[in-house]
Image (cartoon, rainbow, N blue to C red; front, side, top):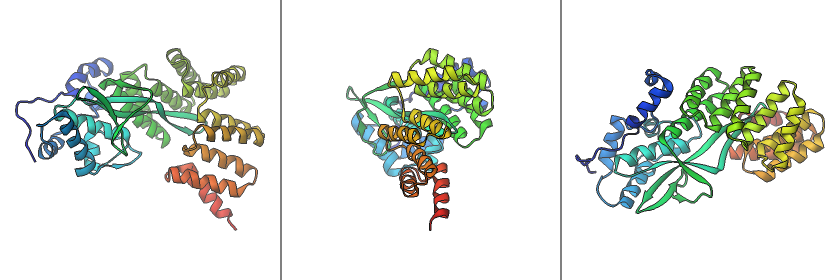
Length: 357
């Protein structure tokens, strides 16, 4: 197409972040840490070939989106979270991967894209009685003086009720928290520890990284340390449902059942319960042999978020315990329609297939 304008020097997030990385991670930071939205030479060459630096803001914005979803033909993949260049090379990525590429390409074309955290759409995973946290990140941009946000699939501008632009440093913390969360889900604890330590050192007040570091400590059987991490996290984020829910788990493992009960009551009284809170209560009731109460909690989770695979898997556990195979199969199928890769749903599907007449 058109080559790059020789007079324009794109904004470099890498240059701006270097001093912060050195201050928070030490002078050897580049051995372990990358700027996830940095532009490499071969990505820049593709941008120069395909996108003109001329024209209005809206025209350049449209050209950036057409580059990502037209020429690159980016497709959605939940994991892993990728850098801008990795997303470009693989032509696959999740929401944060898309925004890394969106920010990288947009800044190369004299635009002002930035990262936006959406607070009213959170992403959690529930595994082994604890909640693993990831934020939902979209791209933001001012075009002709008006701000719009851009999400993956579809990539048209979106309107969210509760969102906040975040710094490049915070976005890098989200990137490493995502890597840590993915490693936790795969039970790769050494990798999880590496990525989450980076996330917490870069963004020490980031609630999701704090939460996931506590999960890692629980997995390492360092329960007292995990409880302290959650307590300190709640000092910073007193209404964080994942922190409260996981602190309950830590208290129970420590035999501090009175404190766990008070915290559970607080969650319900404040009406802060997420679907995962209800799943957690349902599993606890099921373990105590109360399938009626367990089903009640799982149905509350379903009302809170029917599009969450873990909700349907929780219902499967209850229905299997009461011998209701038809209902269990229904919810296994629902879970797999929502996430065909969900490990627990696939295990239950295989179990039910073996029991089929």
